[in-house]
Length: 186
Image (cartoon, rainbow, N blue to C red; front, side, top):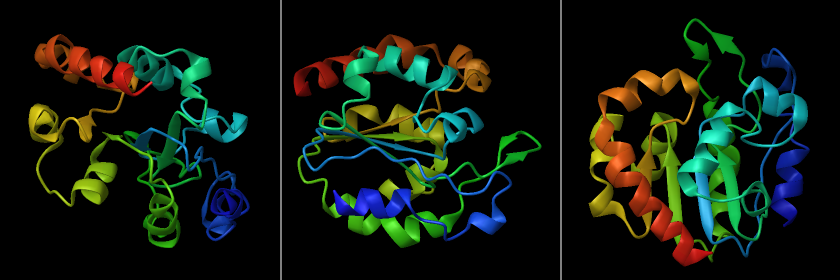
């Protein structure tokens, strides 16, 4: 996809990023599942491989897929709200710069015509893909109304361990439904 190559060579906000630009995206017009995330971590920035960290390990477990499946662009498109590492803030990474979505998302998403499930991870992706202002927990609880086309997940970061403990229903109810839907599509 030409747009993927254009994104990978983007330097639009390179001067404002603490580590410079290294846009990371995974997409193919054949992708069946879209993972709409936040922004690459520092590890991802260094390796050029999305979810190549503890968050990715947990996410692949939630999806019940292998690394080979997960990194196959004909199965999974992975499109973060920002394609470069935004830097570190007081309580984790900084928010994804809005310029990425404004510049690239509409054209890229228009080419993902085979996507049958959009997995929305985190509040920034939620606001963009659902145009919703509801709290993340509310949107995750709404999973039955969103499936089979969409589902909202909390970020799989180890930092969200407390959220997962407080909301045991997530791993008991949502994860099995998510895994069944993913299995059907793959």
